Image 1: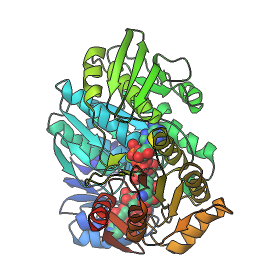
Image 2: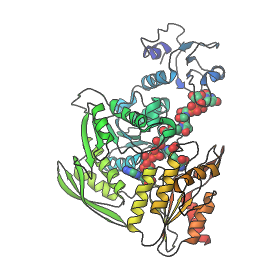
Image 3: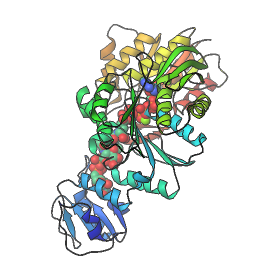
Image 4: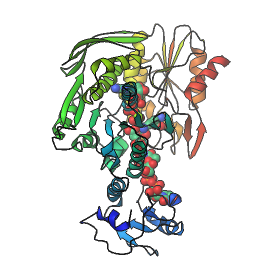
Length: 486
Ligand SMILES: CC(=O)N[C@H]1[C@@H](OP(=O)(O)OP(=O)(O)OC[C@H]2O[C@@H](n3ccc(=O)[nH]c3=O)[C@H](O)[C@@H]2O)O[C@H](CO)[C@@H](O)[C@@H]1O[C@H](C)C(=O)N[C@@H](C)C(=O)N[C@H](CCC(=O)O)C(=O)O
Ligand SMILES: Nc1ncnc2c1ncn2[C@@H]1O[C@H](COP(=O)(O)OP(=O)(O)OP(=O)(O)O)[C@@H](O)[C@H]1O
Ligand SMILES: N[C@H](CCC[C@H](N)C(=O)O)C(=O)O
Ligand SMILES: [Mg+2]
């Protein structure tokens, strides 16, 4: 695409009439620039992309988009906000790929990864080719690609959509983090369905208040479009049991479908019965009542399944086909994952890293535990500090043996993070062991027949970040080794 045509998409804010080179790619990292690239300078948290414009030009950049004039020997186009302009240009450069896909976006504090995988399965079983973007990876068909963020910045996102279009993907399911919404990473993405899981405390380091956090989540619904396109209608799928849904309903003109357990909803689960290996409930819907038996446990799993059923239903998949698929879902890596090395006590690895998810998962463990519950848990460094005492309190409340340890301390002192946790449990009985491996070993060495050990916070993660170093660390492997060494 020629530079003039590309920059034309920024009309009327930019009136560029200078040199008109062919633009072969758009990059915001000088290390990825090739001859012919347009280099976009982003002022980041760590560094300022403007400082890399010279290096980008040396790598062959044909033009630079920046927030100020720069002395380089290629055209520099100045805009007020390069991050916002990047979203516009990425969408244009890749020929509006999200419009060519059925895009389902999922936001909420907990359950995004799980719900996205359930939805992916339903669409795959329905014979569609799927794409998935989220915490664990980007997936196109069966191929997976590593990711840095749950929701990538606009350039990577639109490039990924384009790849999906090229590979004949029908439906793209993606997690939409609150950071992504606040930073405008998803500007220009044309969602067909927006799904809300729940809103509870997390990320207050960034959003500061729950109200600001809710506002960020709400952006997914306000961006859902304001037109009534009857050929390709848009839908918001909302959790009737979460009070934030009322606000989100007001933010969009799209059709609403609600799901829930406690409050009246279009899709409501009733007569729930749970065993240690699965859950049965009556799904009451406008299409009649059906009995559903899933292989997942915990009330939160029912919510994830209902949200998935809703997203698939509004996308035109038959309820019968949807139910058949959800009944086959086995669970997602690192979410309530059982480690079985032949021991006579249970070990569960789970990704609960917020107060609400920890409470939910411990409540579920409590429902089935016959003896003691050990909970090995830590809190991430450089993240919401206010959740630390709350998580510790929940661990002590629901577990018989709470063991506080490190999650990913990042740049913080691991002992100081544990101290923050301990602030929430003054006078209670707990054990603190900074080294996560030792903490897991401690729980496993003290477990007796019939006990349950919940190892929370890192789920599928295969690393631990301490300082600026990343070590191999997988709770599932560490637990297995500890059981074998016992
Ligand atoms: C605070 C934050 O969101 N940071 C994101 C941001 O990084 P940054 O601002 O530090 O970027 P930077 O390193 O300063 O670079 C600035 C610019 O210079 C460029 N650069 C940089 C170095 C260089 O040598 N050359 C160069 O050109 C970079 O490409 C970039 O364009 O831009 C990066 C690239 O898009 C992101 O990967 C990074 O996410 C970091 C890793 C992060 O931890 N983000 C968290 C807070 C986050 O976004 N989390 C949510 C999930 C939350 C949830 O679970 O709900 C997510 O969606 O992942
Ligand atoms: N609907 C839910 N409500 C509350 N807790 C849940 C729900 N679904 C899952 N959880 C709990 O939250 C943990 C994380 O789930 P999941 O990875 O699906 O969430 P996520 O929203 O993708 O999280 P992240 O924002 O970190 O990517 C699970 O391991 C489980 O303990
Ligand atoms: N997406 C979440 C993941 C947290 C996972 C936990 N293990 C941690 O490192 O804090 C975040 O960035 O806050
Ligand atoms: Mg996730």
